[in-house]
Image (cartoon, rainbow, N blue to C red; front, top):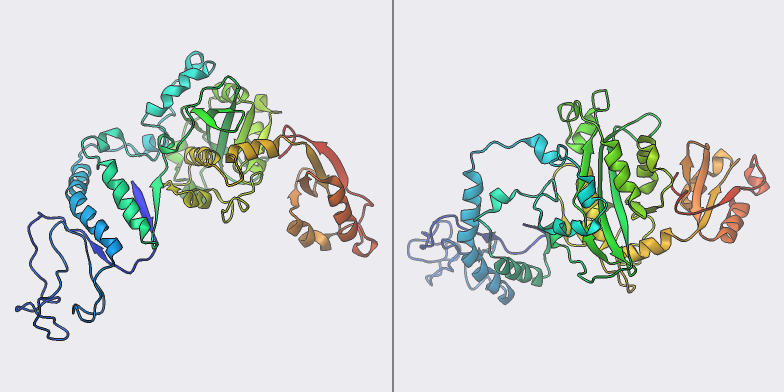
Amino acid sequence: MSHVVSPTRARLAFSTDSDERAPRSPSIANEKGGCPQCGNSSPAPRYATRGRAVAADSTSACSESTPSPAPRLGALFEIGHSVAPVIRRQVSAVLDRKEPRNPKALHHPQQKRKHDMSSDDDDFDALARSASQPDSSSFRTSAEDRAGTMIDQSVIAQMVAAIEATGDFKVLRRLTLDDVPSSNTESEDTSIAAVVDVETTGTDPERHKIIELALRRFRFDANGVIVKVDRPHAWLQDPGAPLEKEIATLTGLSDADLAGEAIDEAAATKLLKSAAVVIAHHAAFDRRFVERRLPEASGMAWACSCHEIDWQAAGFAGNGLGWLLAQAGYFFNGSHRAGADVDAVIALLRLKLGRGGTALRELIATASTPGWSVRAVGAHFDVKDRLKSRGYQWHEPTRSWRRDVKDREAEEAWLKANVYAPAFRPRCAVPDIRPITWKERFL
């Protein structure tokens, strides 16, 4: 399924009836077939036929004042004519379904599944079968709905090519990991990573709680190419108190969804500890919540797909997860759920960037490089805006502005000139700088 996003100069209309010709509308042609605006007695252009996509200009029906549709749209119209009956059958089949849906099951189809730790958690080769499992995304249409109603993919490909060739459209494809290209190369030099996302009742791990934890592992080779993907794992957690309205709206979860639910700590911990690195799109947020909820999984290597990949240098605007995904040509719909975010991160990590490798390769290289944790202790309140613009964030546990950097000397020089100079009235003489690896970062 695809979304088309962009303005267009032509208006496309698909009829939903039979393929016989539709009667002309009085607003388009008079009884003699003349133009209703200029009175031209020549036959008016045919604006609509059953089952055919046609373009209508908004200013005039007269062929003298209205240019014919651009040649590049001709192929699109013919494709629309051939695919319209198939679309009708698909829509009718879905609308005619009588079986009631279970919204709770759609939100977390994996919550009642028992974890067979001996079959696919220790033997990662068993995870290759994940590509054939249709429930890898909570938001994917079920196989029952799609059975017998699929449009020929070659027809869709022709439609997409014709639409995008106009230059006025960008077509987004629904994200399913089965559709995202990966390598079939077998390599003995591989490692396991786990992508994690949490939904919470707030932003402070000391006061707020996780209400959903999702993770999905994958195996990758030395070149940063993902070669196998595990099935998704997700758990809900009853926070013990009603959700705030904003959180319920954001996640689509209700108090009824969470009532009596609990994260399987043993299963989640074992899955995380089987990985060489844990990846999150905002690791500074997710790590503190995860390690507070699953203390046995503390001390692992973490990487941040939001801040440790130079998305701008790769030609992307911004680093928000949904916006990055859209620029890569995909979308996921539904509420803001952890499982969908995990799949989105994996899809982005598979991308080949313009610098000769995958996004995952750049992430691993950046995250695994040791650096320095800089705390601007004793900085005066008046310099907080300078620190924020430099990339420092307020670290509540130490009550100081903190930033992780690779170049210690350059950062010390900047702080000396902009924070610790006597004119800025610092309460300390120098910052607190400590070495850091990806096992200590984001805490």
